Image 1 (spheres, helix red, strand yellow):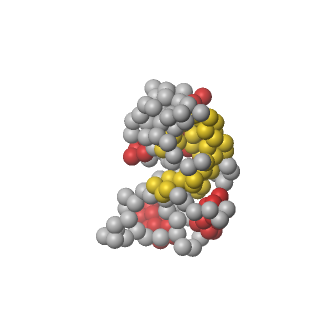
Image 2 (spheres, rainbow, N blue to C red):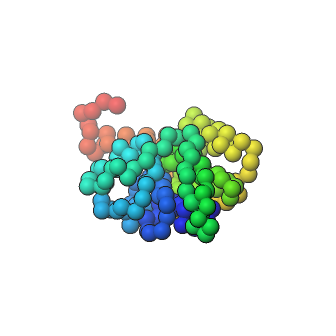
Image 3 (spheres, rainbow, N blue to C red):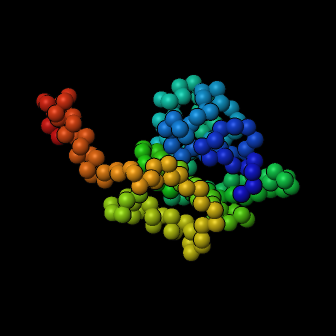
Length: 182
């Protein structure tokens, strides 16, 4: 994919389309309520949460992309000025509400930008997301992979979602919510 066409989780000047994987601070650095550089594509959930993080943001800049559907963008090649069609599909990243990966396809091949994601080996949502990715590829290979591996250090040991949820409930019961039944 040619530079100057698309930026993912980067908010500087010079791109024709901007994509947000999710609303955590490390992915929105440089984005503000006064940001006005172009269309900003995100998931429906992120779009609904957006005003909470950026109360004065011009919401008309947001373009909601449905998870699991291809969306065609008509851009132009920065080097030649000729039209460039780019397809993009958001895929559930299972990281936090609204978090998505982006699969781009065009003359450049298939580019997968993961952002933060948390797929597990089991679980219905993880299986559905994997199937969505494989269906999006339709037998093709990923030509370029932008993999966010911030926490992919063997020194980190994260509990499963199920165990983490149980730990949160236990913590709440022990400290703050003695009168609440779960």
